[in-house]
Image (cartoon, rainbow, N blue to C red; front, side, top):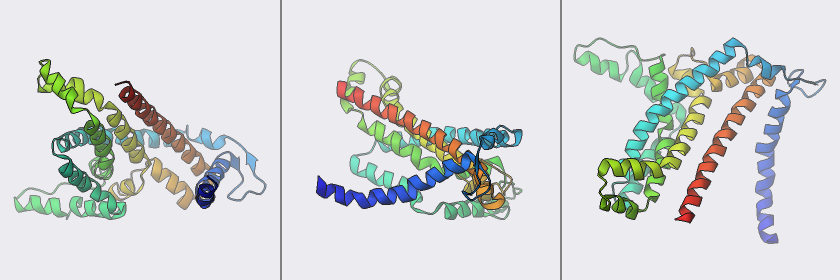
Length: 278
């Protein structure tokens, strides 16, 4: 045990330095005022009160609106994709899941620029439309462009947990459903869909948290006119220099993420307990 503790010690030190210390600084900045130094500071909650101003509430509403829309599309597309992947044998499933995750290996910035080349006024899609004599369409700097970018970025995080849940379903339960006279649709709704709910919840929470916290996609595909939570935090730290307010927003986003992770953990625990009971 002592040998293992010596091996773990360097990782604990690095975790404290790169995770715990910055987090404590963000908490400190969020409840203090007096600039970016720790000299002559005073404790206050005014930065959290500022979030209640209409301009910032609009940012939250816009973030949640685009987040819900993106998650809804990801849920439909992701569930269908995950379900059909589980129809193949295991070796093929592993290959298909690998193909789903390959886009995640590419930097988000590069993927976003790829969408710009597709959706711009002189891009691939409009050039294709012009070949058939159709007029060009405006895709860039719209809700459509931002949502498309978000969906392409977070879709794998919906597919993987749903696929994992469906793959864990005991085939004998599906066979028993058919033996009891259930048709394909009844088997899907009463067995497969019901038992894949934990994966759906995990996928929804992960994709929603990622969609409301990103800042690269809204900034590039939205042309700077889309201010979401991630963009607001970036703007406060980099452009405005108001670290205190930026930290307060970051703390709120962190709380939302912690709540989401708690929900995911609860469903994972319930799924494990149900499996143990069976």
